[in-house]
Picture 1 (cartoon, rainbow, N blue to C red):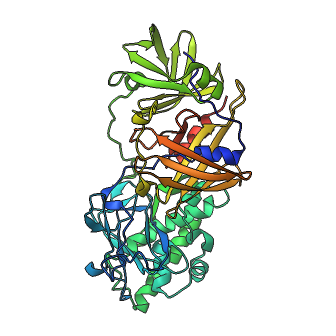
Picture 2 (spheres, rainbow, N blue to C red):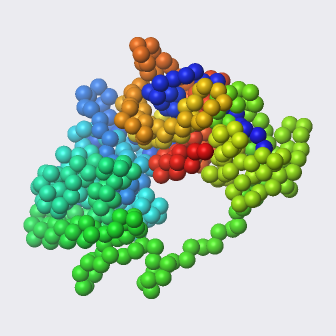
Picture 3 (cartoon, rainbow, N blue to C red):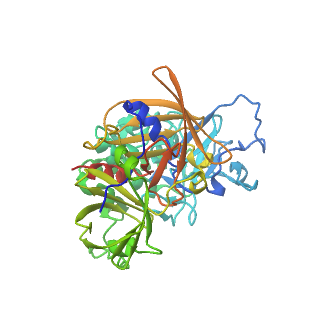
Length: 491
């Protein structure tokens, strides 16, 4: 086939390069019911913009809880009452309940006594990506902005998070932080995996509201005792399958169940998917894909070209020739491209001859009109991951990079290399046209870049800065997906 394009990019340090990565998309669609702008604190019915009250970002975790209702427990009875439900305005100006976003996060004022109400038939648990069938309530704790079964236990028993951690024999730093994200960090992964198993097991013991536990010492002691038992069992569980396990309580005690198996201990068969071969993906719709390189020299030399796959033929400009597929390899004109990732909107492949990663994209921002708009609401408090090639020295071996970007609600952005401890900070904003602007200081020089994202609605998509100055990068909200792409970007 041929190598794909890369755009001109000046040689940069890792940190400066991370700024070019910043552009990573908004991490999801704009949800009208999840606009965290004008927050009602539950007392006044409106927000006093002149009041000097700060904000905080809370994260609701069993797995990440999506579309969970946020309440301000003004009377400290641990019940999310109707008048305590926080309100916000959606993009249509309508007043709606304040709920958590796709990462289980929401911004509230610092004076809010947070309760998170997981609502049956509405709230989604990211562990299963399914709507929960039994509701429950989680209480916050002053020691952490993570609202979880652990913060709930500590609140119910009037304990510090450190005291709780010591009592149930878990790592305090892990349960006070985002233990779901910590599973991807090598030095904390084992403790985080165990904590996640304990959390999703304990949450099954929690009632829809906490009134029956509030001030009930015997019930709270029993729940705490059950948590100790669950933690001890989790400590002996093999980590390789831990994400598929749950520790459940029945009449005989506690048992470890595999959520991928049915009552007969048989693997639950998944529905047979419609056959989606690489060729059917390539030839879907009109079979047209924008293709380009992640290497700067190749991107400059070859530009982005429109490929059309139809009935075993490949058309590029005025040229048409046959192509074949062997396994996950596309072969055309004697050249091979090994596919390492594919979806309906983006395909990534390796060109072994050019030692380059290439893309086939249904959407590509050849002009501002072809780019999608960023959403400040959707981007706020998002953590995103980008994969790109940092080699800007011509036809040489690639230098893959994996960068974590954290867009904070107060307008700060942090870039962190997932390969070492190097990090960089800047500020971000989104204008009315949906263009993301990142401002940073590199070696004393202020740098401003404008970012544009693909119109793709998939979780893995392309982003570029300035349209004409920087390479595309692969962006996703899922660390495991980004890491898998990064790991395969080798020759």
